[in-house]
Image 1: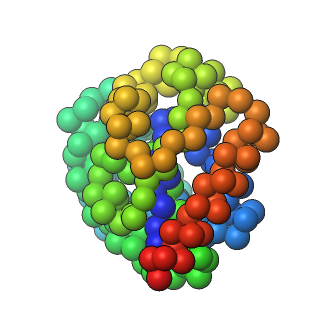
Image 2 (image 1 turned 120 degrees about the vertical axis):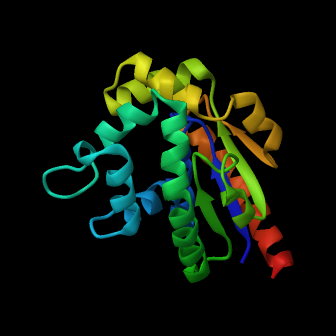
Length: 200
């Protein structure tokens, strides 16, 4: 199985890119969705999070209160590392299971933390969706209805843009229209089909 790891900072356009690739028939394995699966009620990771961060991060219905947890970990780098120590192993296993089940010519693993975690070991090639920082902030504030300070804190917790770009095999600059993004992805899609065919 040929796997492309797709990443980018918050508000860079990862979802727009993966939505389009999915329309082209490519299986998308989403690390954010996997991170939700592993903290569902009854899962060991949720119990460990409650033990470490307190019952106030568990909502009345027994699910994880993501907003409460986010406020803790993005203000405290040490707490974020502890959370990652709980969730990353479980997420990695979930991703491997989903990749193994894929039937498309190649698979895209989309993850905002591709380079910061061992998830990079699951992919054959990396693609960064990139946008200028000010555009990332503007998009995220509009999409999530959050203040600029919160977006800045999330961006600060993520890998620096320059380091992300240095590690990329391929880069798509996403500061124009959706049509422009799709044109760039069409070219890469054809290229990845060739790579996957040669990899088989």
